[in-house]
Amino acid sequence: GDLVNKGPNSAGVVAFLRQQGAHCVRGNHDDSCLRELSKYKRNAGCKLPDKYSYIQDFTEADILWYENMPLTIRLPELSPPILIVHAGIVPRIPLMKQKVDDMLRMRRVKLKLKQRRTCGFGCWLYKKLTFQKQDGADDSQDFETFIKPDPSATPWAKEFSIDGGSAILPDSDESPHIFFGHDAKLGLQQAPCATGLDTGCCYGKSLSGAVVEISPDATWDTKIISVAAKAKSTASMEEKVGTSLEKINQIEIAT
Image 1 (spheres, one colour):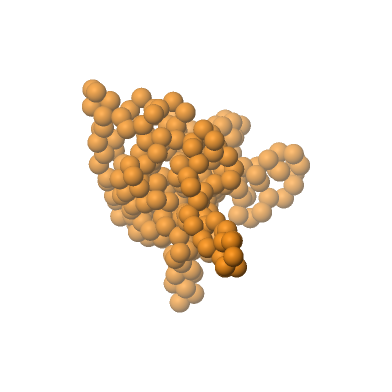
Image 2 (cartoon, helix red, strand yellow; image 1 turned 90 degrees about the vertical axis):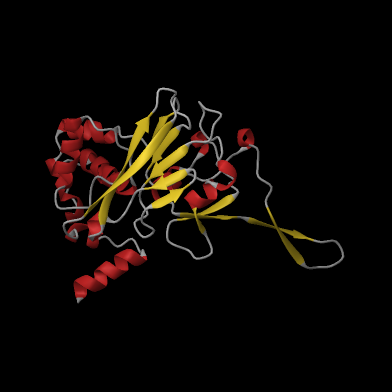
């Protein structure tokens, strides 16, 4: 995900990946771009924000491919199954009941606390919510989700991996291993049930990928490959999403 707004040639990235037949998941920057694209298509000739001026360079084929980019890619036939998402998955919530904004933007989670008054004492006691059964899960989640880093919350991948993950896929009884990006501040994350691959390439760090080697019995192993970035991307440094990493980059630009 995040094919756009991370370098000098966003339209070229979309065209290249389409031409290569790549399978990609939608990221938060893709989602924002598609919103601007929708406005542009409804109001022909309207002025695009400078940040999204590259939309004019999309071909019809690019637009069709880009608009159909899914939120997740899953490989349920593998053991364990693989799920690919841009930002994250809330633990213990079935995939079909995950919130779109969490899958695009979440970084951390924190277990909610429930208040109840005790008889005769007039004080508040707090206790952790009892986990709902998966088939009864709804929008009332056991976890509070966080877009920005919060010291009181836990990286979602670590929380998801507790007790061996959870069977959230509709077509598998096994907990998936989730590959994701989005969180450049934490860098490479290797939890038992999730792998985070955003290692800050556009911030001058490195580009990382996972090569999955599948055995005949459908089990698999993975190898992480990282390549150092040649330079920082000016386009990505202009993004102001409030993370500490981006604030550091802005200070470096100013000095």
